[in-house]
Length: 446
Length: 153
Image (cartoon, rainbow over all chains, first blue to last red; front, side, top):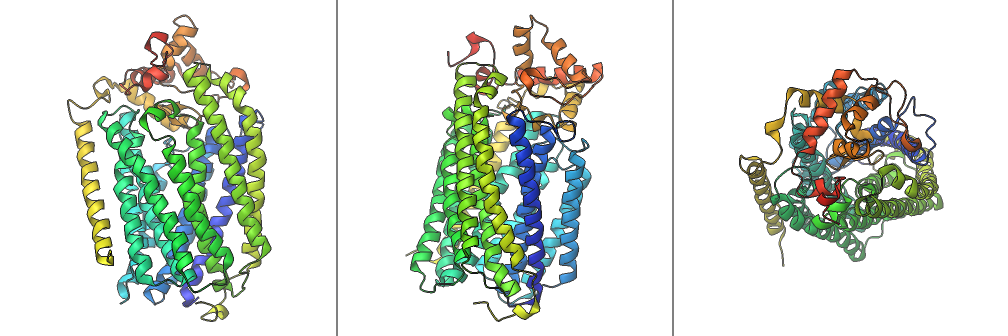
């Protein structure tokens, strides 16, 4: 690392890993409930497990993005963060809000709105927390003479992510409008501004790892995020086909959703081409694996599998089925979880001074977690397709269908175990790196 | 060859244009004449029902308007569906499930025992009936129990 204040990133990454472990545990609780093993029902019913699983995902990814920003921004701005103490305050308050929300879910304290279950008073704390974070990042940038495209794109993504949280806080009497504006948050986050954050991190990593000229990488970064927004904003329409709003969204959403995979394809091709073009071969092979892997798996999970059910005539039958779970798992894993893993893999050796650049454990972590997640995606997909035919086409009763597809959840649990094993290896590697130290200053970074 | 400046113009221009179109379409689709959200039939009871729906995180298991968690049945048109199965007693069946003190357990999968009051459960039924009257661009026929309504028959 080049600046002492970058060390704060380590603790955000550590929080990320901790919450990821919890997220996986709650995922298993749901998986077992689906095959009839619901012994925890009295304490952790499915709706609690589900809210914990998805909200922890959001919090650990945000923590990872924030860590990424605290690592990247000083290096790009070529100065220390304006205030490290406040960054730690922000870290602790983020952790407290996250933990308080999760505990509340066990006591029926929530808003019951998919992905935005955090109760209203905590929403305000989230806003305050994110404002503090943005304040630190943007002031650091503002005080620097050097403003790179990478840092601007990353900061823009984080700023818009904060702004877009607000429509989700508007109260509505109508379930339809509630849902309509909830997607402004959820869709425009994951298929919009979060991709700016991902693009910013990806661009930083490619510049560092491949050695390709910054101007070239950043030019293509603009093109890719341009394509993302061009398709993604109006692509929001695919959530509006069948929730009680005008048919215009079927046409607009259908067309623009079909374009969404192109942006992700461009991102995958961009990452692979930059790697091929690069003459510098950075020794951190694990970071390279996760970086290229993220771009490629994002295309498959978010792009292809998203496209698999955003065609209106398909979505009419798949809307509200396990098909969504299939797409969501690989999309979040590829686009967001893997990019966080990539930046962690890149940053850790620089923060701690321990060069685990190409360990076999690191490689095993990558392959096992990916094989596990692909397998889980397939299990979800098979269960989903069966559900669509039996329930939607042949009018079988919901629970009869669930019994028919429960075998796929046995498979899912087995593959989730493989996935967890991969993630555990990653976390072991994380721990083995030890703590960040000032001794690592300037000695290793490229 | 594309320059960085042109790439930036493409990003900023494209984003601005599509965002404005998005806002325009939002206004268009929710304006009188194009609105199909069934807002005119929202009663106090429906609003209370929605509140109960949210504060108990029903969406954490069920789906409604196709949105939720796929662990428990879709509840759009649930009153119709239960009317058909229980001889017109749909309302009563839903109420008794919501008021039950022990977990309702159809085919082995447990629901949380909410132990609601009669009034609360009536509000939830009113909410479901309101949902059932929304024009969902065809999805209501996919989840409807009435064969003649189904578009895939």
